[in-house]
Structures are given as C-alpha cells and as structure tokens.
Length: 438
Length: 196
Image (cartoon, rainbow over all chains, first blue to last red; front, side, top):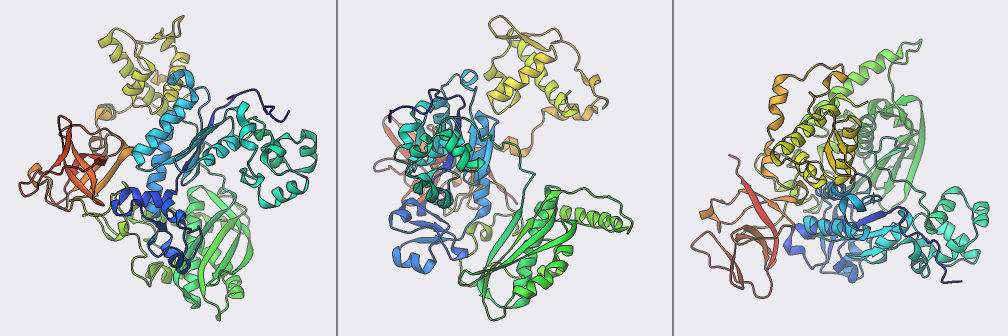
C-alpha cells in the first residue's frame, strides 16, 4: 500500500523548472577567470550577502550574512557589488534559449523559469527527457555556468525536481514516480507551503510531502484553503497551475526599495531617497499603463527595524509629483531624527488600468491630460538620454550622489571601466568578460 | 482574422518557401522552414503552417507531409486588410540586415571583451579593440579563441597538430603555449570592433 503510486500517468503535461545555480555569483565567476574556484559573494553595496558561490557556501557563509560576519567565517571571501545590469542581460539570455524550444515560457524570476514542453515530442522528434537535456546543455554551454533542471507533470513537481539535486542537477519525475520523491521530502520544502501551514499539518500528523499527498481529498478541501488544495492536487500528479507566459501587465503592487550607504539621519537626504523610489515606481506603473489608489512608504533603520505607513489617494494616479505632495506629512510622522536610516521603500497599491479623460464637473481631467502629456515627454527624454535625466527636485540629493559612498569598490566594475563611446548612463547591452585579455 | 503585420511577415515567409520549392522541387521540412524563416522554434513553425493551411496556401498529404495548397501561387492576400499596399521602399529593405545581425551569429551565446595585450597584433587585433566572442561552439584548428590560462583570459590562435593542441600568438615576441593537462577554451572570437 505504501508503495502505491499517486498517479499512473507519467506526463499528461510536461513542465520543466530551470534554476540558475548561485546565479549572481556564477555570472561573476563565468566572466572573470580570477574568480573561478573561489568563494565569491555578491551584495557588497548592501552590506549583506545576496548570492554565494558554492565555494563560499562550503565555507559556511549563508545568505543574508553581514560583511563583518562573513569576514570572520571566511576571511578569504571575495566580496563584489551587485551588477544587476549584467545579471539581467544573462537572465534574458536564459529565457531566449528556452524559447528556442518552446514559446510557452514563464519568466518566474531573474534566475529561474518554467516552460511547457507538452506536445513537442513529435515535432522535435525527441522524448521529453531528451528535450530537457538539450535545453540544459545549451544553457550550460552558452551562458558559461550551470543550471539545475527538473521535469515533471506540473509546476509543483517540476520545482521539487529542480531542487532535488544542485548544482547542475537534472531530475526527471514522471507522475508514477512522484511518491518516491515525496517520501522523504519535508513539507516546507514544497513550493507554496510556508512555515505556518507546515506547522499546522505537522500537528495533524503529517511530516512528509507524501503524508500530505496521501491525505484524503475531502479532509484537504474541508480544512485548507484553495491554494493548498491545488498544491495537494499537483502533488498527486494533476496539472492545476497554469504558466504565466504573457508579459505581466496586471501587477497587484509595484515595489521599489533602495539601500544607501552610509546610513543617514538627514531628513532632506532620506526624503530624496524615498522620492526617487516613488519616481521609479511611477515609471514602471506608467509603462504598464497602471494607476495606484494608495501607497505604503517605509524607512528601514541601520539596525533593520522598519517604520511604515499607508496612505490612500482620492483618485487613480501614476504621477510622482502628486504622490510626493500627499505623502510628505506621513513621512514627517514616521521620520525620527535620532535614528540612522539605511534604506527607504515605496509600494504602490490597488493598481488598476489607467484610462484618462473621464470628464468630471470640476474640470480636473484637463489637468490630468496636461500631466499625461508632460510625463510622456519626460519618459521619452529618459528613454533617449538615460534614466533620471529629468527628475523631481525632491529627488535631488538622491541623484546628486551615488547610492553608496564610503568604501571604494561599491559600484560594479562594468559601470566604471567603460568602453569607448559608452557613457555612465548607457552601455552596450552585451555582457562583458572582465579582467585582462592578453 | 490576422493583423496587417502578421500578414506581411507571413508573406515574407511564404515567398521564402516558394523560392525553396522552385530550387529544390520539393517542399521544405519543418526544420528547413525554421532555418528559412528565422523562426525560433519548431512550435512556431507548426503554428505558421496551421495558419497557412487555414489560408489554403499549403496543405498536407495523406502522410502529413506539407504540399503546396490551392492558393500557393496566388498574389499575397493584402486586400484582406484595408491598410493599402506596402510602400515600395519597405519591400526593398526586407533583405537588408542591421549591424547587429551582421556581427552576431548567436545572440544568446555572444559576449564581448576588451583586448588589453598585443599578442595578436599581426592578426590586426590591437590593444583596446572590442572582441565579440561566442560561447558553446567547438573550436577548430585556426580559430582565434579566448582561453583561460593561469587565472587570466588569453586571446590566441588555436593550433592542432596531430595529437597536440596549443595556442599561438600573432606576435613574434610570444612563444606558443602548450597546456599542461587540458586547455579550457571559453569562447571563439567572431568579430573585432574598433571605434575611432
């Protein structure tokens, strides 16, 4: 009975999940031969480890560790500032390579994606396993570092498969073998099951993912909310969660957070940081033709305490000058001169499609129309001459200085060592090998 | 219904398939269509064919092979959309390529680097030049390659003589490099750019 398969169908759907191995650190190692085989850590500009090479992991460095701690655990660690421009270029390469094989790709994160291979066996004249293998081979060789790939009948199982063996894993879980993989898998390792739910399920006597998958359907439906019932179905081999293959336009929220060093308690400076985040969030909202009905602003102190406040708007907007006027009193309320701040953040809430010209009797639509024109020009100028060529006066201090002063080397090398014809604002969109080429 | 742009690209694709049919006296395979049209996956080819079948441009025989359809030789269906005919210059420019397309063969596998040394100076590669390099391709004898030697990148000719593989500079001052155990080649140089 306990060896009974959860489903008899192997691949009613063939879904793969691909995960870059230590993506940011690997991007750095693959372009600079001096970093290969060494403990490399990115995130220097934030003061905490954001990505670790396997060599760094082996020496006991953990994600989120502070620099001072890293230096104690692993004095030979090489700390690098994050170069998101390069990571994003490589991320695009990842998606494009997978799209050579199938157009159905969900760009799930900068270093991971899902793809649907269903129905491609005949046109490609390969088994699902072979197609997956070809994808991994192309990724590893064309990007210069390894990826872990999982193949399963749905997203939940594919995700378990890609995590099964890392780095450079290749795990195939056909439906009729799912139970073999769930047997020893702790519940909280399942995608979508958090500590709360796994604690609850533990109390109900379920320890492993298999215990949960074998629980009877009626009980699951009665005691858990819909997303968990859906996970239960996927663990049993059914295909429930569709792939989001269209470019995302219906964001629920847009969040922009930026850290700055050194920490500051100067009000105009901290406010300018917040102002710049709001401008950035609005740029994204306008790009997706969305407007917000509210915002959360927050300030994070040097010792990682957050102070936040929510503000609602009377009408939909995506103009930062309007928002900044409204949130100024709220900012004054949470700002405390006695504290040192290290980052600010803004989250635009209740986003809806933004349609102008809804004439109202007070004639404010005329103003809105003018603003829309103004910001179209601003967006156009910034597209042509680089982000933040035109910005609000309230963001002045954030734009005057670079985000991170202090220790030399907090700005990625790619942004300092420019090629002829490149400017601080615009660089060639091709990742670059670093170091001497002799 | 299809949009004007879709029809235009389809016409382009159709013309290429027609030309293939003329020269080879047979219809191209899915893979050949992929190469002809520049479509990125077989799945896209499949969808293109489905569309062409629905427009009677091609059809399938009993074995499922693609054969010319009833309307294979007809003039493009531009009349379907009330957008007028394309301007002649647009038609003429269809077969031109951008500098990017000219220099880059496989976009995803392409990287660049700045040459710092003078070891390839006799091959016309100067310090300060930007090289476009491609990862993931097998290096052949005579290729200019980027290899990893003692924790540094090096740009050299790859030479194969019998069982021996070594790197050769294009500068008399440099000696050939014979790797001790194995040679790690990261990429192959595909183009060199110099901006004045």
